[in-house]
Length: 239
Image (cartoon, rainbow, N blue to C red; front, side, top):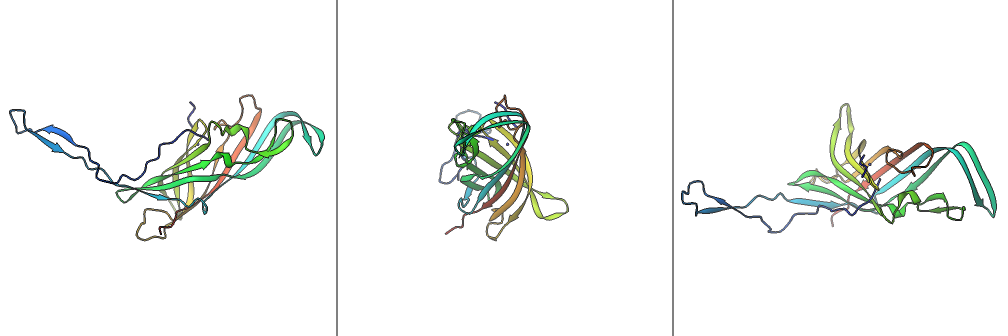
């Protein structure tokens, strides 16, 4: 499996560790010479809290700019047939990706990152269909039957020297079988004074190379494939 930020597997989400569950280990008392006396040790389990994102207020927009060479294709359009034959062809397309779920995590009241699950079946773009007709649909290269979701895992925020208005987001992006590390500046707002470790809103932009993320068939003659994302994450308000 190639690892480098598109794709989907079933993910195990870390949720809040609440309740009275404890782990007990029997450990021999070092002062006991008989070896019969034992004491009970209960490890401390850190409390992990979750804060959900507001999927309706949050957004994940994408602009894809792609250049391919030696294009030769016959397509049907407006009731007629058109032959495409070019040395190089470039296109740019905008789309949005629906956020399926998302959370911020707190461990012992300290920020422990976050996770955003993207619904890749929601992606729609112009493409050449099975009947060689130009249509709008879910791109085949995403293979959404096999990979219905993608994941942005936020690890931490780092300060940016000389920039007090933004923080660097350190994260991993997974699309299909490819996972890659990304870093991007973002404006992060904290409106709830009682939970200063939980962002109320994050706004940022980042880009990836679709070639490195293996988003093109192996036989495709792709010269450039840049995907630029605009991310807005809004935390759900507690009622």
